[in-house]
Image (cartoon, rainbow, N blue to C red; front, side, top):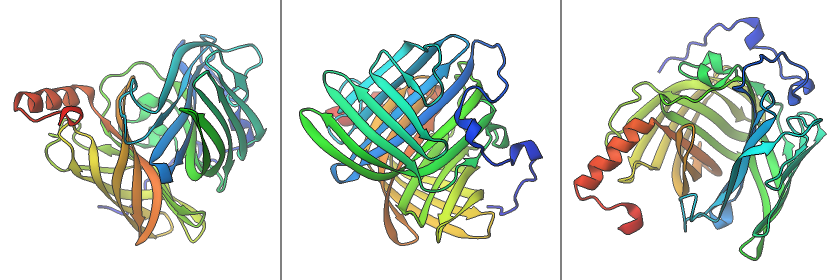
Length: 341
């Protein structure tokens, strides 16, 4: 593992500005595949519940694809998890912005303070969400073109660690939310792509003083999933003693997988541009199998970060052709699918 940082051009190192929380302050091509994405994560760790509030605004098509999801250990498919609702064709109404919109599927967002506070709401017959997302550290610009094999996701990209509070009503029960999690924002042309290199986004937060959020890319997208997989640096951030720094080198190992390929145990070695190291081990507690523009085993993770307990998640991305071949081969060998084991 190397600790040498890459030299980046100035346009890829500027600070994120409040105007970046809007559609209207950057250039936009006329491509129908221009994407303005917004993702907020949240969790109820004591119930082993993880979730997302996620959107792909397509302003040139005047549409927004988006939805919410909740999952726990009792269901990991979209049709049997705690709650799942995604709709690809919400009208993007005139006057809407990245963080200021109302959608037909019941999602709404209000920007209360740029780069800081966001009101997230969702209303259907079976689920309601009222969440306040507040940044606890400034967002970092983490342009996709910096990372090998990630440029197909667009151009500009930033991520921010924050705190989420509020409530969720689901299955007739009100769940209180108070956790640390991540949000991200991206824009650029993002078309359909099948050859995802694989890898993972991993988040772990002890408290406002200690945590990480990293994205790493698999050097061999077709490495057999029955073997330990290793990913190296893509991009990310490390928080130590309350100070945020960019990731410059890292190694991610999936030490154990289930027969269906989903991770069980993970290990991270991180090094940031302040010369600091961080080590984390994690165990996945609940998992969502998400398959759309790429395949993700999306898990709630119980982490140990430098010897301290933390919560977070792991999005384990797998090339779809590799995963299909792996699962079919294991079924033919007579290995039971976890749902029927």
